[in-house]
Image (cartoon, rainbow, N blue to C red; front, side):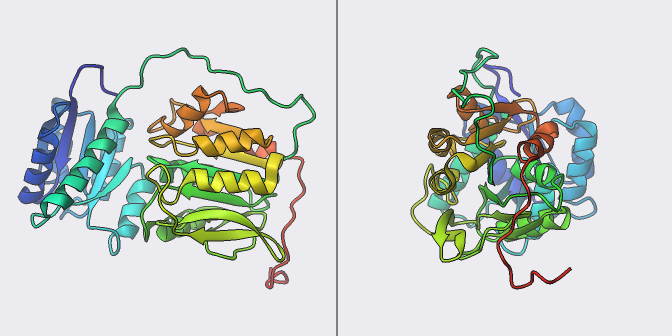
Length: 363
């Protein structure tokens, strides 16, 4: 985290001289950011890290000899807390590799700028990149270590949760993997997730996390029936909601305008779950920039549901969870390492129940 008043120092790693030049010029236009150095290979970058003392490293995903993923792994060995933003080709062919980098500890992924990018495209790229760097590196204003108390239901009267809702953004894939991979196969409730991501990425995220988890994980789709022990991740570019279907609650997907500049939006999901399940919702808000999820958490709070947030120390960015904690809406503020255990404890007395499925006879 950068000291107040000091420029954010960014180190750039890219085998393309043109890409290094574009990134350096983009960063240099902001008075609060400076380029700490550049390297044309992963090996060269590793030899310079200690000397340049960057606050953040930008790494090209596809480089010869030592690629971006290998460079990320080595950086994390040397400086585990040093944030890394991966750069790669626009979403599509590279999304699988980008996902592995995000699950491996990269804080963000951005599409590489092109030498042929027009003025409007370069301006959008610059605004997006600078915003991400500042959110990851800038310190939060000093505040009291205590937060407003939530007015909870009296002990023993709180409803047992029947569904788990999760909202997450910057730094989310790795945090989401740590949480979901620790849940048992017989987890007694459906799980709905909004991870801020563009189209194409969420399908890869769902498969990658599902391959490493005991619960089943899929990208959400319209009409999906909610089942215990299964997680649905909102598809990139679409809002996901819970609605009442003919045979119970199911998922609805829409392309309504972004909310909080996000689509999918945590607020959209949380509000629908508050309406559908009332006090039987447990919402978890994890690392992420901005305040998406705050209004939805307020709806869940009004409905009597429970809210856990990830603590600041284990978050890449404490924007989303911090906003809820500071509003006094969090029942618990929990470290990422303890989150899965606390979630399981909240559902501990519930007996697994699933909606009937056509493949119910399998296994």
